[in-house]
Image: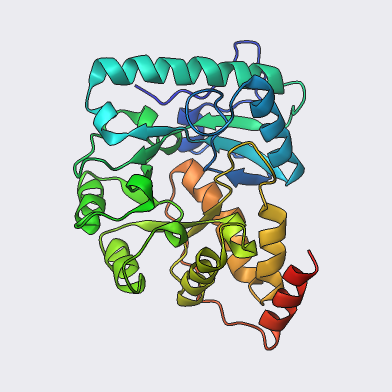
Length: 294
């Protein structure tokens, strides 16, 4: 079973690429990939209706996104219940087809893909169905319940790696850590995880603590991917985040996090390592001034 790409039958080849074609090595047209968002209407805390979902796609397009891989929430315990999962997955796919159908003329150069963001409410998720993975490939986007970290979270990450998949821990800067998060990040990485940071965290949209942790992970060289986690309201903050990285001397990190590694993920390829960020002298004072002026 291959992971479906949301595609109305009349969609042309420039609008939609099927997951198996991308994973088999078909050329991915130029443009940015955003692989973490909530644009399927009415299925989670993202887009509430079709109109909001379409406006969300337009907002990502305005930020230069060419390939949208949207990731509605699902609990790992739901995947383990086949009848419940099939019912929910059918609702998700039908709703996403409607979004794509509404967007193919508005955004004719955009391609649309589907995955899930899995909440690890069980330590041993079932992941054999490609529809729960990112574009049906080897990467699995995961998060922990209510931004809290259960004991043994590294074991859940290791379980996924042991199944032959690569876990991507979502928005690592936003969890409610008890103490210094660096040792836990290190355990996740050694268990095989890639770490993802939300673009908006780099510009302080989730508060000072999330911003500090986002930059700290970058300075360690432990961030592998950046994404919008866009919920179809407000701004995706991708352009502003990239400006912040470049202001701080992170041109190479910006290209790896927002350009190259998301494309590798979409195609199921190995991610590139990202060098630690060495801040330009005086960069932080300019960034603080920039925030005060917004």
